[in-house]
Image 1 (tube, rainbow, N blue to C red):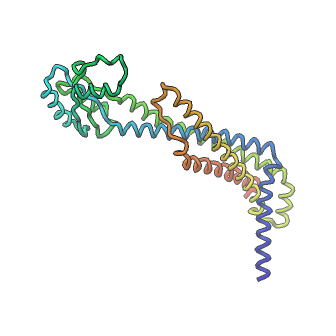
Image 2 (cartoon, rainbow, N blue to C red):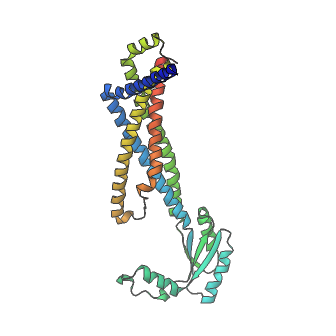
Image 3 (cartoon, rainbow, N blue to C red):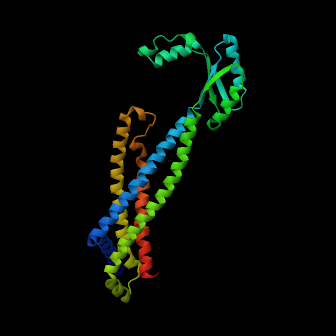
Length: 304
């Protein structure tokens, strides 16, 4: 029992020594460690920024797809009964879920409510407006084709559809996803190489010590652990700093965008909504570049 406790105590002391050596290695190579953290912070800031932008664009596209409506204006010369009957023909179009008739009077009431207090529209009368249908679509991606089909219905004067905006956001979404993946991959590799080189420098400085340790029977695992700890610490330090800066920059940018009326079209979610995904992203990236970077350099140095 005493022997077992002694072995356990020795193992704990060894692990404590190895962890201590790993963290002390950061300070032994101050400039390289500082450079590794700074580069990691810069890379993760760009990774985080693209991730936040992609997330917000995805939300905007989803919100736009939920508003899958188009306005179908009826010829103003048609009698009320005939204008209402067009709804039956609209409902027969394959991609139409339902259509709701809005009379001139209802349209005027809605118009006045939307422009309440604006004297420029005070003289608008019901006769100046057209009967219309609010048409709800089944599939927003078929908006353009559905619009063209509805235009063929006699009595339809005009259609208001935001398919160009929908297509624009969808294209932006696809492009951003591709760019984000490409940029993230490149920047993670850059961070990984920087940390790998930092650990290589640490191992080179201690090559005589490592050689002696191997001569007296130290395992590769025993030699490797301090350098893995050093790489892990560098990666996580960079991730923590980058996360804090990303939060500050995101909130400042969103506040600035909200102050500009021309940018009201773009609605950004608060960072608190992104908190858990961003913590996971930064933590995983820091862990990845830190441990993998150090592990790769150690394998090459130890030739194992």
